[in-house]
Image 1 (spheres, one colour):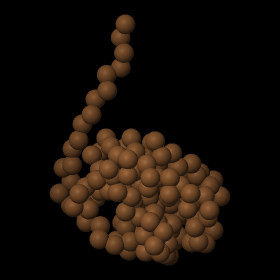
Image 2 (cartoon, rainbow, N blue to C red; image 1 turned 120 degrees about the horizontal axis):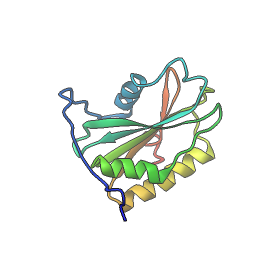
Image 3 (cartoon, helix red, strand yellow; image 1 turned 90 degrees about the vertical axis):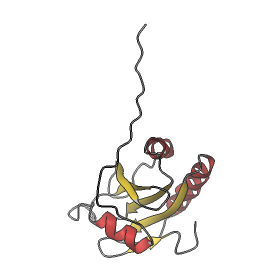
Length: 144
């Protein structure tokens, strides 16, 4: 009987190292990877993956949803983070309405993700809610 082989590889050959040192630097980074034509139309979730020195390994496009919501699958976030040998992550999603106030669902998923990350020794550094012009940081507001 033949089964699939699982293969793990890691390569970070990008000479342009980007260091994250604040919520502002995360916001600037992700805005360069967001489609500004859709930011006020469709909700999206991305995960910024970082090494121990807070150097960006990559940005993972987790999901795209509708006008009012998106799926945030904790197992998928952790599987990508572990495969990338990530030490830290930042969760980022937009609110198409432009309202940066976190919903109760946003608070719940942040808490659940933070607990899951602790188990596998990955730090959830922040969760940003973004709009075209600004952002809300869970860390800056003391919610992480």
